Length: 158
Picture (cartoon, rainbow, N blue to C red):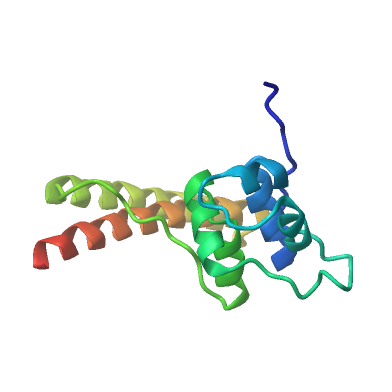
């Protein structure tokens, strides 16, 4: 059976986020055939269609979004929804427990990377677009380590 490739694009609308999600699940027909899907391929197509005034107000149920995002491993709709309200989606670590000395070492390394990148970026007195993007990536790495630490330590308080 040939593997279908679908276009994944940055989501500027809820419909585009739904389209990316449905395409990541194999397109409307394959997504509709998944055991947790309870709507037709035609309805999934309507969720993806921002151009038709009749379909514009049809949105996917949260339960179906959660199922598809879990199936494909990508939070397309959740990320769009979060961004629309100035929030972000952060994947929580799945490892049991926490190695505190390793966490401290990882945090030190990631913060060191931020300082190094910021120092290089500020050498000419300004931060350009590429330097800002690189700093954002480094800060995401810091956030991932911090979230892993918070999650691991919270488990110990329960």
